Amino acid sequence: MSIIHGFIELYKVWQKIFPHFPTTSRHTLGYRIDNLLVEIAELLFLAQFATGNLKLSLVEKTSQKLDTIKFLLRLAWEVESMEEKKYIILSEYLQNIGKQLGGWIKYIRKENSPR
Image 1 (cartoon, rainbow, N blue to C red):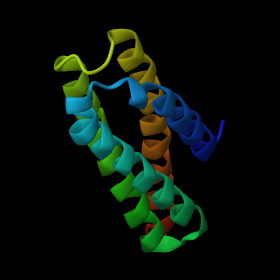
Image 2: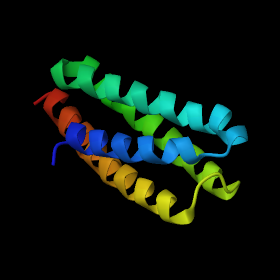
Image 3: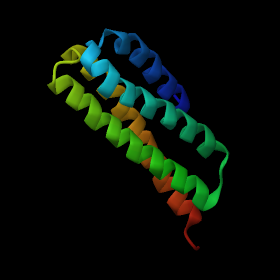
């Protein structure tokens, strides 16, 4: 499964969970997570067509934002804005996407290194 396809699946799951956030968290954590997910979608789209150092920069930025989402989702779970089961499902998607991003970064660095 491509990273973009996996990300789309993650976002579809998120869209089913997001409306069930308590109002107090929906307007803070929920919207922040949602905005970061959209930003990641944009970065992934741009990265697939970029080359060289620009591609590396975009993928590294994507990875940083993904780590931020992991933290915010954990926070949302800790303050009981989402059920543990939903947190686990989202975490599994994020873990897989994170592994793919790590592999992509490694590949780009190898391709960009002087031979």
